[in-house]
Length: 58
Image (cartoon, rainbow, N blue to C red; front, top):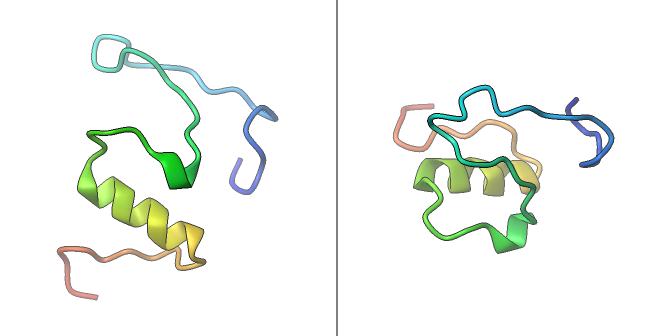
């Protein structure tokens, strides 16, 4: 659920043929190779801005 801390709910990898594993990452230490639009969206959320329009008109 949004706003809950990791570990208070469970997630499942519903597409194991496309995703090797599911892990939690600190926002200030994201893994290499993350999709740039995803990194941007996470940065915006971390700064209290839940709407990200990168590459699209607002």
